[in-house]
Length: 150
Image (cartoon, rainbow, N blue to C red; front, side, top):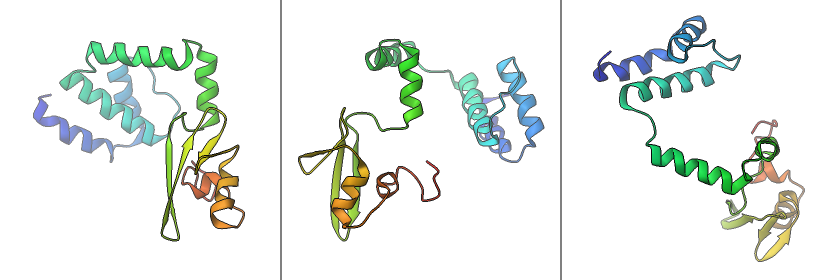
């Protein structure tokens, strides 16, 4: 397929039956599709189609990503999976929340969170300090939806 046909091929993924997506996966990845949801299959197939047509990441980009991974977890896959399981933002992340016209900035630290120069163990404590009422801190800062989804 020419590069001109790539946008149409990507658009077709949205309307393809799941069985066809799985067949496409088999063709592009030389193996069976994983048992993940449709959205995952679509996004990975779209990336792979573009990767094959336009090329993947540059070697120096891949090397840099590996270096960053090593810096974060020293190559220890257990730490990598534990971090993913926690779903906690990485240290240094800044969370912004406007409440009654005032913007509040919380920084994620190694031991918890920092708000207005004070350390906190939980986002819920910060949300309570800001609003004066009990909140799920993850919901208040938009890291989790009210129904429990991230």
